[in-house]
Amino acid sequence: MDFKRLKYFIAVAEELHFGRAAARLEMAQPPLSRQIAALEDQLGVKLFDRARNQVRLTDAGAVLLDRAREILADLDSAYRETRQVGQGRAGRLRIAFVGSATHGPLPTFIKSYRSHYPEVDLSLSSMNNAELERSLIQRDIDIAVARPRLKGDEFRSALLIHEPLILALPDSSEAARKTGKLQLSDVAGETFVLYPRRPRPSFADHILQTCADAGFVPAEQVFAQDYQTAISLVAVGVGVAMVPRSVSFSARSGVTYRDYEGNNPGTSLTVQARLDNRKPQVTNFFTLLAQFTRKARLPEAPKPPQA
Image 1 (cartoon, one colour):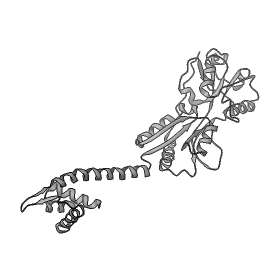
Image 2 (tube, helix red, strand yellow; image 1 turned 180 degrees about the horizontal axis):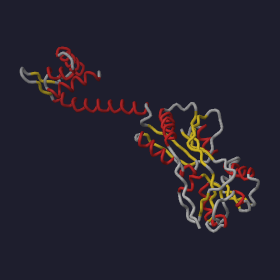
Image 3 (cartoon, one colour; image 1 turned 45 degrees about the vertical axis):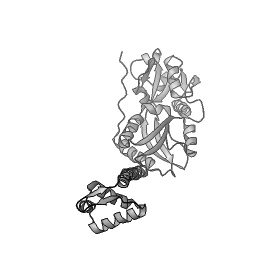
């Protein structure tokens, strides 16, 4: 059935007047009458009773009016949904991130993305770098937020943030109680809590290299699988850890965060996706990210209490 004829039929059925319906449709009355007659011939029924001064729907016409409205509403909805998905304004976007990213600007950016694209279904999960790389390659996710980044020519990459490293110290430690500025060498004799345990090389090796560049190797090393576990070990006094500065924006009982002087290469969060992933949702994500990073500023870390 011609959908245009359904639109013509609905106009006549709602106006119950061929002249007014033709004006509404911005067409002449004779071709409109011919289209309605052709629809009746196609169906083999009369849709209108045409009296001299009145047009009325037949019972068959009343049935078709209800169904035609539903059909055209469903068609409009299908067109609208198709356009939204095709423009990246609907559909699904799968995002995975390293655990420490939850303390930086990522949550604020995700909130911004949601406000711009409320109809996109976001799937969020936490993974380490090895899992992120594998999931991107296997197309199990669309976006990876890695620290510092994933290697591979098949990925596009954008910097989310570069931030300094800071020390996470047990409240009871001598370094935490020390007034004035800390040197990295002040904790050279402490047990270092490093993460992740595997795979390697990893953020743990970045920290070990930072210590080596400062002229020491941690006296003892304890490995945790993720940064949440590492901070928990610091909180109970197992040792100290070096973490991204943004981690300090969420207070943790038993842990004191301190800046330090000396070698500090910092650490980066990058957003990555497959180069051949041309989903409009991914394109919109990177476009919005570029705008966000131009405006975003990392807030100042809380100052440690002075003795």
